[in-house]
Amino acid sequence: MNSHNNGTAKRTLWLLLAAFILPVVLAYLYLTQGWYQGGATNKGQLLDNLSYQSLSAGNPAEQQWQVITLLPARCDQTCLDRLATLRQTHIALGREQERVVPMVFLTDQSDPQIRTQLSEHELISAPAEPAVAAALASASLIVVDPLGQWVMAYPLVADTDAQIQQGRDLLSDLRKLLKLSRIG
Image (cartoon, rainbow, N blue to C red; front, side, top):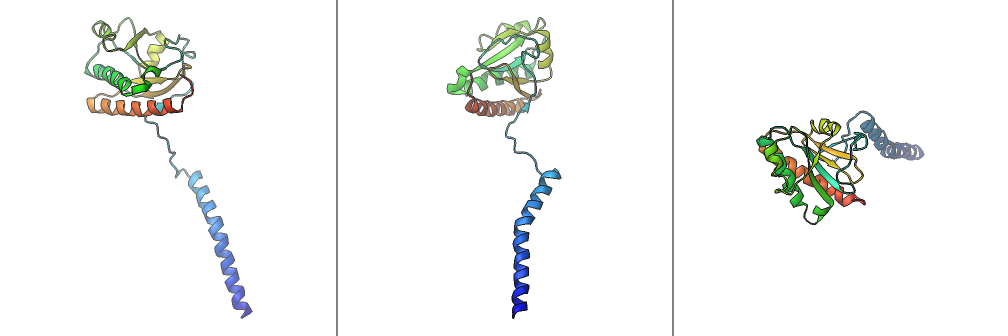
């Protein structure tokens, strides 16, 4: 009878050890083998070490969040959709509108016809320094924090449906950033 209890006790001990050690070993393997995909909730691409200061450019709207874009030399339908997305996203922010400035950077080559319409659509314009224009050339929209750090970029998209989805993504990210921000 004693040997039966001893065998049961050993089996119970092994089961207890497995119950505590096996999850630790599996978690270790899960994390080290790259099986885990991080739980990022942002839709835009996070930017690292890019700011007005690093571009040696002045911040046209200090102490405010900004959503910025560059007006190209010829503003086609994609460009017009991007400007509409910028304007509609700003309106959709509701009571948080005053914290965010929708801004369009202009170069000497920017479309003169659209330039004159920016103020009608409540979009603020600012002259783009060469470094800013170069940085904006590869992105559709960029979110800038009140300290001048370029936080998040959204890629250039061609069709209207993708532009609408990008506007939704931008709005979602802006709401999260504004909710978590203690500045601006």
